Image (cartoon, rainbow, N blue to C red; front, side, top):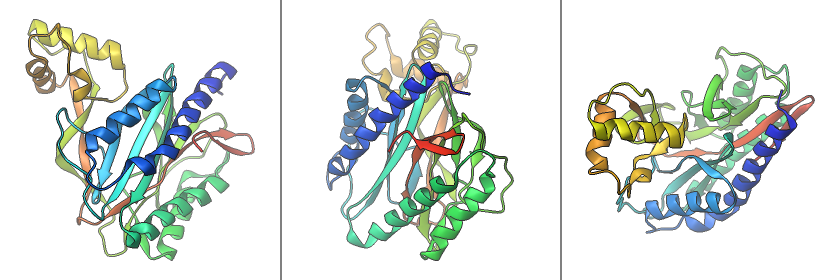
Length: 300
């Protein structure tokens, strides 16, 4: 069960995310630098009294997850694109996670409405004792009835203190194994939608711009040892962006020290995930607290 003190932290993080959600559609426009979207959202979270739970993801077209701008990113939002903005806040390690999809082409709007409808219907049935595969089956049915396909290998997830993904996954399709929702759990539900002709699955790309602490042991240089200690202290088990380490003046070369952390597997990367057939992707996401008779939407 969640204590009253912990619950207030979750609710505060949720309020910060909910307020930020309202701003996202106005930020996403043709030609804007992706790094500007990332940094504006991350700064907004801080100004609202929280901290980013992970780097803001800005995933364009067939990119489904895990793209955040590297330092000096010059990429921009292209004309007519569909853009997923996935972000989270934490208060004392208690996390709220959400995503908003914005279409710059009217023809792509139905894909977004389908993702939002699937999420809304899923939230209506979530309560203690409900099987997670049954929620996945409802999400799949809702999406397919509208002529689209869910992405089967992206899922919702249970959230814990300082851990964005833990425990059981919450599928977006039926016919998957799983357990039951429990009172007091905090969970993120996030349907991903693509076209019916698509593969309906994601693959790892060869790029990674988001990382997490793995182990202290590994670096041999003094710079590497200092940097991994800083990463562990600053981010704990939460994902972080390499660009967040820019400007550490006390290091002779943050870049070379970070490269050592990667080589020694002291930090691990999250590959950018793309739809396997190159199809467009939409996403909708909220974080909820499972209550005794349903769920409380923390990020609405």
